[in-house]
Length: 399
View 1 (cartoon, helix red, strand yellow):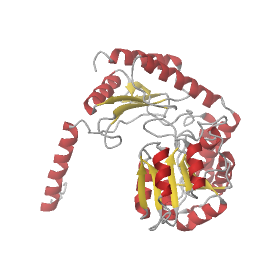
View 2: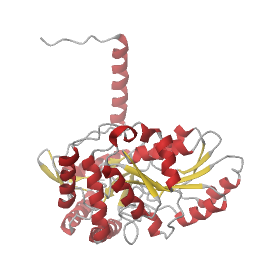
View 3: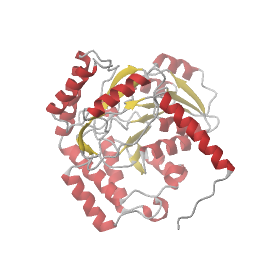
View 4: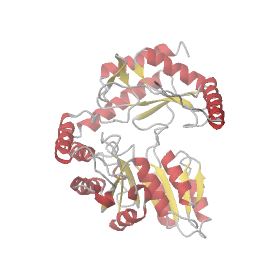
């Protein structure tokens, strides 16, 4: 006999509050739902048995389903088992961590690196460990949520400067001499707009005012620069970034985040970063996958080259159709539709036609800035992208 769980008056009240909020989200075109993908994350995926062109993945180089990476991951699974068993400071620090951190540091041109369980954990744990009361953080208004949350947790004063406004940043730094430490934190590629931070100018300002510079390179690692090493290589500012963050979950095709910098920095974070200290270590299979991905990226630039060919093809096509792709310079191509209703209509139209491209709405982006956020992969075929552009052409009639 199935037992009934009695409801308290509080839970009944809470259920009503949830119903009211869900109803509001649906009415305002802000309701979200999960789509379950069956099979590997590739340029095409299956959802409920139907084939879709995937145009919303951060698997930029298409490495998630690469045979060599899967084989190396499987080998690690057989050797080390399914999990790490504990936090890295207890007993979860497998030998693969040492290899991966040396590989990342060399790839990013830094003295040392430290791997976290996710990019979010890397940002939150690092910022909250580096900054404290009496310090000030200068943060671009379009920085990722993990930077915002880490800054709030730190207890430091936070100054949010207008997006990419170097003049305001410098004027504010001039007035900040009373603070003990000054941190400038910015994304290199902004995750919703796809544009780039003016890192050479930010480096100049950081040096001039003796500020610590932290750069979130999550969307640039494996993508930007002649050899895909990220924003420091792209802007030729190697050695100028004090705290260099990245992720293993996007172009690298695995999972995890990392911080690069001096040996003293990583030593400090091992002892002070709560998201590092109190998180279980990553599964060995994931570490092996990341190692294998870096090997491929270093040896074979064709993945990056194909990615940028596809980026150029899709962006130019959308521009010719009259869509507003904002100021994107990267593999993240926003299609600004402004209203939440229009964005939801476009998303549903494309979904019905076999394009998986979720709409981005508040609170992820500001009110009136809703958009489709297309992300290109190296593994998209020209035929697929031509089909996408054809559907965007037809969609103009229904929006």
